[in-house]
Image (cartoon, rainbow, N blue to C red):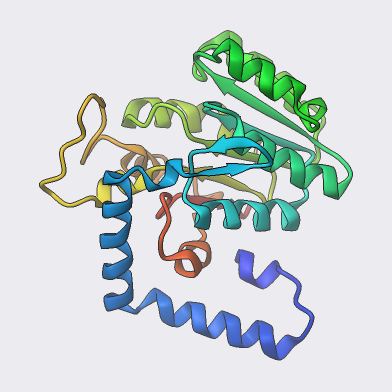
Length: 251
């Protein structure tokens, strides 16, 4: 069952109209090509660095933030695991949704959490719902801490947004994806690297075409049929950093 089919609506006719419209987006080659072109221009101009969530910088496309809050509201996880902390905006977004739901914790993992960011996150009004773990997200001791936080949780959501090389994302999937509960998601960000124009040059970054989150997702899914790509999320957004990256656990 896709995300769209599990999302309640005030009126069934509205929900069906919405579902049909989004399905048409999925095969609208012109609209999708324009969306991809816009996303490439947005990356070059650092458009996604323009935003914040409740006072903390959020380095994300607004469309992805919208999708994330919708998923959290639907899944109502007891735990959200996020790799990649930066300024903490995404952690605060997740924490704000959990605050409204009335339960849950966010665990944020980063190889380096700068002191001023740590202080601001911990002092935030929603800091009581956030646990920070510093270290590589694939290091055995860090993985053990995260898995300990997930023990006994009935609903877990995972978001991967740290180092975007194929090997690192694949290792993160192997470390954390099995914590995702049935019906919830593992969201893998920046899979769009594979879809950038062939002549795009990634300066000062170890990833690029053939070596990125999307290639890791494709490899990992071949041996994990309990997950499937929920295309309904991508088709709804069109402009997203996570094409093929909304992985729903179905078994």
